[in-house]
Length: 271
Image 1 (cartoon, helix red, strand yellow):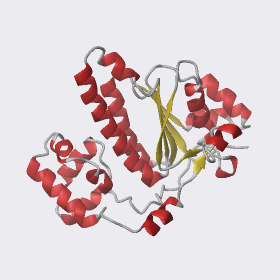
Image 2 (cartoon, rainbow, N blue to C red):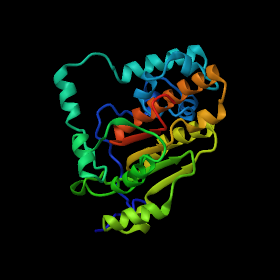
Image 3 (spheres, rainbow, N blue to C red):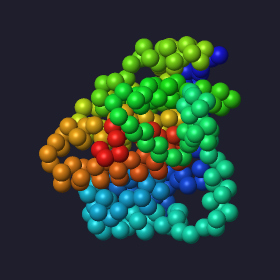
Image 4 (cartoon, rainbow, N blue to C red):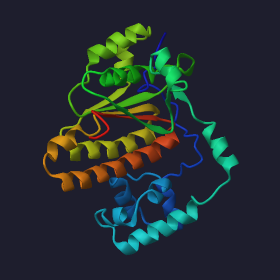
């Protein structure tokens, strides 16, 4: 079984979700290029990303005044209206969902077929319960063809605790009978060192997803760096976590266009 090296693939990514409208379309309704670049610098790459951002968030972008933010919101409304729709329309949209196997038949049964695309999945549990092992498995399975339960795309792996092991990827690739060299080449890896670096990496991910096909985005662990950077500072930690959740929402927004499964790992649900 061969896994295609996605770096060599020339096929242009064509997102299937009708919600996907590139932010460059704002130029057609009076927003200049410099303001679009400011939005991109904050990780907003789609019209839906503007809808998912509050005025406070938009005004917090360097060089974005309240007047400009209001104009951007109004312009986004002219391109896409995310108001009411029928239940039938939502049903049709849900048909686009795919499932990526966990590598375990029993887990797949519990999850109704595997990890959903167009969704954020949180994995939580105590130390040494297999969370990181599952992430390594998904980093391989996400690249497999659909007939093998895969997502047929590249994988983003943001590692906040230094637990990523290429050797484990090799072993898992061997289990599925695929070339581990190609599998490793298809993993876009980054080690995050602070909570701010973690958020910057998530913003950078959106730009990569415009250019190439990705099937899985993994952050292991989602909250570890917040515990380190804000030890004993509850209010600041809460504010930073809220900012992280907003970044997750923006990643979720772009992921919907690219049919990606997003995996966030936590030590436990109270972290």
